[in-house]
Image 1 (tube, one colour):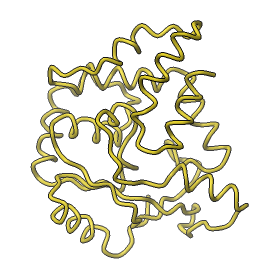
Image 2: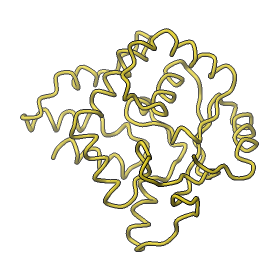
Image 3: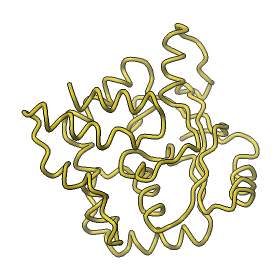
Length: 217
């Protein structure tokens, strides 16, 4: 239900070829239910949303364990990556939880399989915000509250462990997986150790700070 702007696919394919990668993701323009781009609102709210939502190509070694490349509607894959993704999903389909994030899964599976990504700061999609969005953009405090709920409910932790269990078909298991398995929320020491170990793998500095704070508090 999102609106594609002119040259969305052309730009994606061009960037894939220019950067010699297999996969592409882009930024988003937030729109209302009618598809009109939303630009209004308090300056602080717009700045905060920009910092949360802005996509960049600053990829980290294990970032696919902790975030997607962008919303699924922005993703473009070449034939090699698409065939690999399809095969891996066919192999493990019955084991994937029903509430698994499709865009995050796409990023994790392909990156674990050795396929390179380019994440563009440009936007070629108006991402419509309405009552039926599965997640929506991180819009102001409502969006932050939604992210905190996903985090505190255990959904985020389960997703990280699912990625290692189902998607990781290599023998390279990051050390922090054992820490997440053994995490003791009642122990401040355990929280600090985990926060220091994994918060650095988010791509953006503000996300690392927020991620660290969520684990500690």
